[in-house]
Figure (cartoon, rainbow, N blue to C red):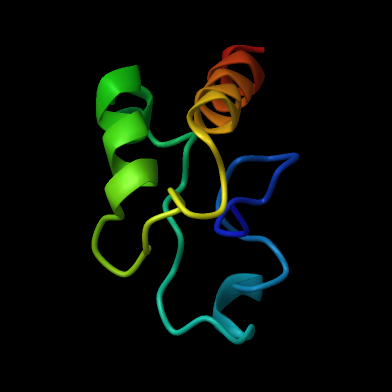
Length: 79
């Protein structure tokens, strides 16, 4: 999922670059309080089926991999 800046989880990665990258829409900031309140089930649904301008990743990641991404996000924003 290239929407994340994998180290900071703030969405300001190489494809966004503060609005200077190739993406027309800012990715979600996973450090934002609203995103921190999102349940794992909602995150899984969003990764599986897509949400807003983010498409589905179901064809690119199997179920286990999608759960691993969610676990990665949760473990890194907790620290």
